[in-house]
View (tube, rainbow, N blue to C red):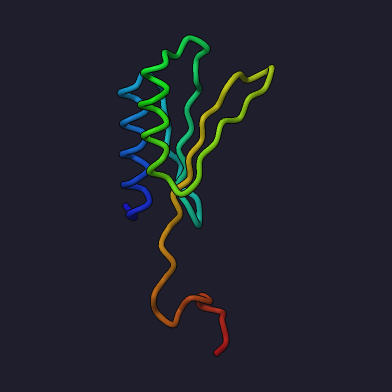
Length: 92
């Protein structure tokens, strides 16, 4: 698992400890964590949640009338440090 996945799993574990059901998803350039946030989340739990997502590269809260509140966090994958940054089709 890439380092971004390990970091995202750690964030998800902290969110779960705060009472949220979090899930992790791998993408090409990042790993994301999402969790539904109940209206009844306590102030102390909010502190724990914010401390957890502060470890991510980006995070936010998406609120809609239909789906409620979804907390999201993104951990970017490392950029290759070799000359192969452009990928196999990149011409030098």
